[in-house]
Image (cartoon, rainbow, N blue to C red):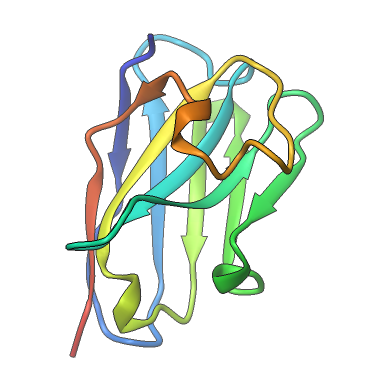
Length: 127
């Protein structure tokens, strides 16, 4: 399993932006599908976005389409999640997850799909 590390969380006002980053120490993420999940207090963990390892296909939850963008920085072995126009209800702990397998539209959103997880970074959207 990979040891994933997230960064970039923080406090932001509604309508603001944050960019989250996911890295793995000493290992390239090129061969792994990477997903972001979030968990709000008292709610189930939900898939936010995913980028595959085969052809760079990206997936997004309907609630974030048009506002969030997932991308790879291959030079830095990092996957970013750019989050714009954040909403109060998007407060929670955001974790990145990785798996070397084949991910598609039927599997990316399930946390059971991914073998490796980071500890998460807190995102708080509040005035």
